[in-house]
Amino acid sequence: MTTTVPFSRLTSLAGTDLGRGEWMVIDQARINTFADATDDHQWIHVDESAAKDGPFGGTVAHGYLTLALIIPLWTDLLEVEGVTTKVNYGLNKVRFPAPVPAGSRVRAAASVAEVAEVGGGGVQLTVDVTVEIENSDKPACVAQPVFRFYA
Image 1 (cartoon, one colour):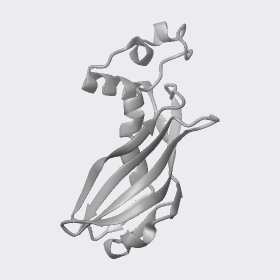
Image 2 (cartoon, rainbow, N blue to C red):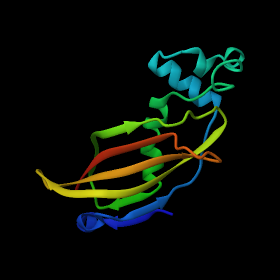
Image 3 (spheres, one colour):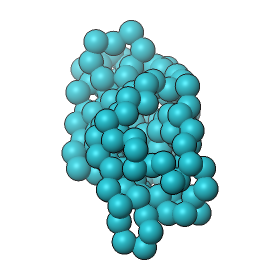
Image 4 (spheres, rainbow, N blue to C red):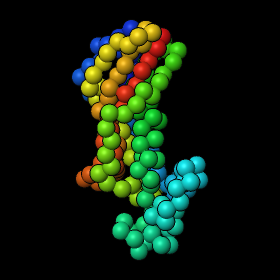
């Protein structure tokens, strides 16, 4: 379920659990497209035949694909009204505890760790995000992205 807040209330979100978003399928076509975009065609990602005998029993998504998907997964959790600009300011930390097998479904769980006002009339959110894999005990990605919003 999406939390919707006006820009004027962003500073009140510190400590807020935003819950979990919708599931997203990570199919082989998405993995191949990412491989083409990044020139990362390592066999564990794109060679379905060879990957069957590999360490994961099939192809897996790139870690950086999983990381990049935080943006659409995150926007499923929080909508800020009255903003003119949204900026990905960076990441404080990132880990990839488990691979995402092709055909898996992932979703984000997030909570707002910190909120700070920044120059130029902006508000910065530091968010704890976990990208969960359906039916897996371990997450695909644990990250702390930093977002800036401007009205």
